Length: 115
View (cartoon, helix red, strand yellow):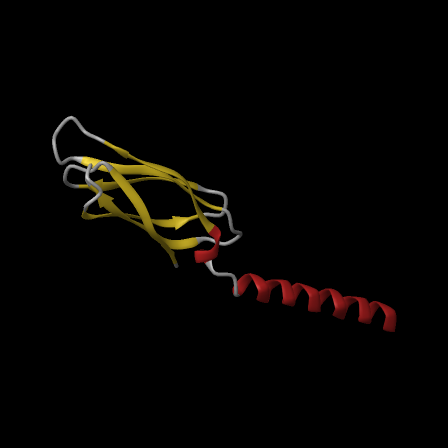
């Protein structure tokens, strides 16, 4: 009887420790940008930064925002672009489309924020 009670308490303790570890997990650490590129539109000034981001963690990200710095052909900064998704589930891939105004030649990833 004491052995069963000990085993039960050990298993219960392990379960609580695992839950606590999950509860402390931050979505910010578990989203990864797979790839991105500037997609130019035939209409001047209507470009976008497109790509994919994956939730590689084990918890849902309530809000994920991705931000880019935009550059023209000479390398001069001409602005920024952002996109956002809500409720990104574990294992889910998001295809983002950040509107990039201006004559954009390239983009650089600034940050990925997840909450």
